[in-house]
Every structure is written in C-alpha cells, then in structure tokens.
Amino acid sequence: MRRTPAVAHQFYPGDPATLSRTLDQLIPRTSEKQEALAVVSPHAGYVYSGGVAGETFSHVAIPEDVIILGPNHHGHGAKVAIMAEGSWDMPLGEVPINEELARELLGLSDAIEIDEQAHRYEHSLEVQVPFLQVLQKNLKIVPLVVSFIPYAECLEIGEDIAAAVKEYGKPALLVASSDMTHYESRQIATRQDKLALEKIEALDPEGLYHTVIKNNITMCGIIPATIALIAAKELGAARAELIRYTDSGEASGDTSYVVGYAGFVIS
Picture 1 (cartoon, rainbow, N blue to C red):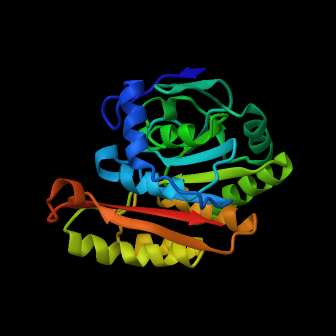
Picture 2 (cartoon, one colour):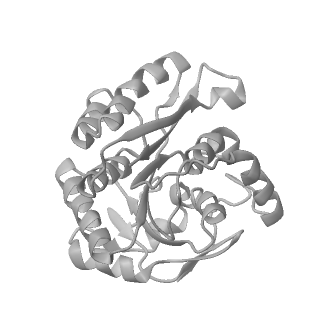
C-alpha cells in the first residue's frame, strides 16, 4: 500500500520547494533538543496551527521511529485502524511504514485492526509528517487512526503500545495529533481548554478523558492524547511541558469564533 497525500495544497503546501520554505519559517532553530517519549501537536492548516506544531517539534530530538495517533474525522474504517505495511508518498519524499514495529503492536493488541480505509482521507496524521521529515531524514512511521472509544480500551491500547515499544528495543516517539476547543469565542475556548491542559500537564490520562467529556470540551484528539499519555507513563514519563497554546484568532484576527491549539512535550 502506498498512500498518497489527501490534503496537500489545502492544509499545507504541496509543492516541495514551497513546503520546505514554509517549514523553515515554522520550525525555530534551537540547539536545546530533548529526548522525549511523546508529543501532542495540532493538525489544522499550517497558517493557523503550524507555528505551534513547529515550535513543539523543535524542542525534540526526533528519533527514526515515530508512532502517530490521530482522530478519525470521517468515520471510515475500523475503530482503531493501523496501516501495517507500505509507505506514505509525501511532497518531501516517501516515508516508509515501520512494518516490524507495526507487527509487534498487532501481535500484542486485540483492539487494533489493519484498515487502510480509515487513513485514506484523514488529515490529522498527514499534517504531522512534513515536520517530522525535515527533522529526521531516516523517518519511519506507524500510523494509527482512532475513533471515540471507552477509557478502558484506551488503557488497553496505551499499555499495548508501550509494551510494543519496549519489545522493539529502539527509541520511538509517540505523536498525538489534536486540536483543542472548536468554534467558540477566545474567552470560552481558553477557559475550557485550560481544564484539559492541566490534566495533560499532570500526566493524568483518565482525568483528561473524563474532564473533556464532563465539560463538553470539543478536543478532537482526546482519544489519541489519552492513549499517548497512558503509553508514555508506562514508558517512564515524569513530565509534560506545555510549549505553546494559542488559537486560530491569532492568524485570522477573529477572536469570536476560534479553534484552540496546544503543543506539549512529554518526557
């Protein structure tokens, strides 16, 4: 299976030269890169959330192997869908799927299914890949698209991912793709998102899950973020650092109707 881009020329430039220049502007140059277990990064169009994503990834020494978890915006395919072989044909070049790590994960988890349909049109994983490509030339990915599932299933999958990474024996970064509150005023979005951000900073995946549901926070990647937090804690995470929080009003000028964006590094 060779996946072709679904949102190039829409969410980000599809022309390789233009995309490279754009990423150069979005990713700050920093010599202070840290080993990380997980990242939470937004997935809107680069004009809106690319600055948060770029700044977040700039803090991390990106390993060759990255597991990307994104929400299922279209409802196609399995509840927890993995692409286990092939590659992604991206504007900056082909990115292979880490078939060894994918098989390791499938061997441990009964909840994860091979399903390419869920990935075909999904943007939440795709927009993360160019950032990872420019920061790690030997990138290999394990892509997972997840629908809304109970916390017990999140716990099971998170523990299975951590076990697979341990068995694999090489560094692997988890990337949870998520935007925050959708289509509220800046005042409401900031207040709502603060509740969720506090749970991520506290490394509290169950608290995050229930806080988002209880307060009707429209955080689309709640399941990827919950799973990534569970897995990161299993792998020894002790700290979650909020790199930046903003909203779409910073780019559009309209603060009456925004989407929130947050970037975290978990180590």
